[in-house]
Length: 135
Image (cartoon, rainbow, N blue to C red; front, side, top):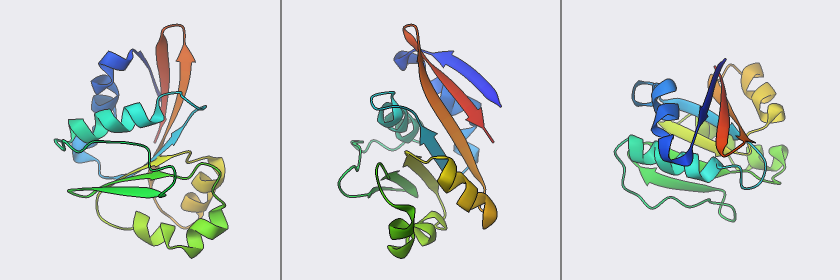
């Protein structure tokens, strides 16, 4: 596990710690409402050289920014329903998959079926955010 405490202006440090440019895959983002999940995804997408306008796909489930960059918001979504909609098949696509609200339940399913992922837990800490990265 890696722990970083950074400001919103220093999120590139999180991208570098993840070695994002050479590590395609699934990134589960956990944190309370307004903890900075979408803000982190914006920085990650920009860090990967994509200038797309990033917004949370809350009501659509997912955005495809092109170049193999996918963004999901599964807040208050039933996992079984997601699976029936083909969510696991989406995660099999080559690229970077950023999943907001990717909780322990989803992590257990991914482990069980042998899908690798990284988990990033975001917590406010004074005027900074703490990013706990689990590989």
